[in-house]
Structures are given as structure tokens and as C-alpha cells.
Image 1 (tube, helix red, strand yellow):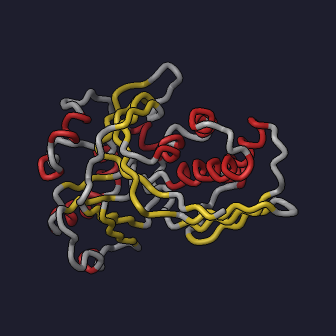
Image 2 (spheres, one colour):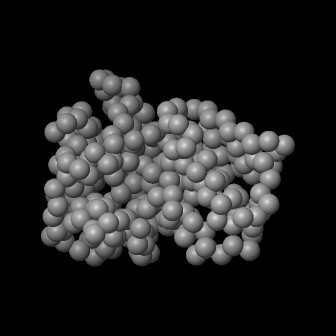
Length: 276
């Protein structure tokens, strides 16, 4: 079975408090974007895992694809045969795009479809939740308001339809846990869903905020520069995605020669443009 786990961006991200379990409470909107990894899952004579493309550089016990397979076998105790799994990474690691969580969610979908099609969506989401707060989002893959630890989901009206999203992905990996430790807590001064539903992206600048920018930009001035460059190229709105390092710009029209506009970036980077 061949699947294409996709990335996400965050529209707004408020870090509002610390929960009793020690995790932060947040409010954000996840938007799926078409940047995808490639995941192949097949029955085999023995378990194997091949990784191509961007290196994840983590031990097997931390690899979310392998953890998803282990969780599926453990929770459902079915006779799941050995598997041959190949993951081609195109979503950068530590980029704020949710690539690892997406890979895990799509692995669970593959195993469900191949071996246990009777599992319903709620059961699969409960299993995905054990792998990461945002993993269940990638099972739904629609614009979603995420609250609490980022694991309580509410669907919202589609946003960005007809717009173009440019992703600028520098070769900088940012630890989400470290970014949380350095962040400050604040209550939002606007209703996130109301803003996104009632105002076009051209009205978001100066209002819609990702709180991680206050932490990340002083430590990585390049990222602040990339955000400004997106505005200089005509973005209606630009922001850090998650805790970074990816910057995205929202354009009303397809930008021309956008990759060339970032050709003098001082670190290795990758630029993609997608119509939403």
C-alpha cells in the first residue's frame, strides 16, 4: 500500500497556560498542505524498515512510523504479519510541519485498511493519540481548531481556498520542547476562529500571532528575515509554522519566480508553492 503523508501549517498559535500534567495548553488552527512524504507498507517474510530522502537521525525506538506499528500490534493483538516499510522523507525534520506525526497517522491508516478495516475512526484516533497530540489531526486532514494540549479538535470552515501558500524551509531544526520551555504564557486578545472565518488573510497581519516567534526569532534572526522577505514578495500574511523553522506566506495570486527571490539565503533551504 502506497500513501502520501502530508504536512500542516499553523494559523495562529497561542500558548496560554500549563496544564496539571505539565504540558502547555494552546490554541491553534491546523491547515493541511500538499507537501508530502511517501510511505509504502507491504506484507513480507520478515520486518524491515528503509528510510530514504531527508534523514530523521533518531534511534528506532523514537521513530514514529515504527512506534505506530508497535502500538497497532500491541493494542489490537491481531495476527499482523511481518511488514516491509519504506519511508521517503520530503517533509523536513524540526520544521514545524508535523511530518513525523503525519507519518505515524498514515501508518496507522495503512495497517487499519490492510488488516482491520472494521476499526472505526474513533478507535483509530484514540490509538493515534498515544503517539502524539497532533497525530489524530492527520487522520481527519481538514482545517481544525486544536485546543488543550493541541489534542482537542473542532472542525472549522475551510480557509485559504483559492490562495497560494509558499513554504520556505531553511536547514535549521528547532526543538519544540525547548521552544515551549522558553516561551511566555498569554491569553489571546482576539477570537481565533472568528478572525479566520470573517476576515480575509489580507487583514490578518498585525493581529494573527504565533507566540513561538517571540522565542525563536531572537535566537534565529534568519527566520525573522525570511518572514519579512515573504511580505516583500507580496504575501498577504506570513508566519512561522508551529515552533519553526518553516516560514509560510499566503498569496492571493501565484507568486512569480519565488524560489529565485530566496536564492541568496545564507543557509541551505527549500522553497515550495502550493495552491490551496
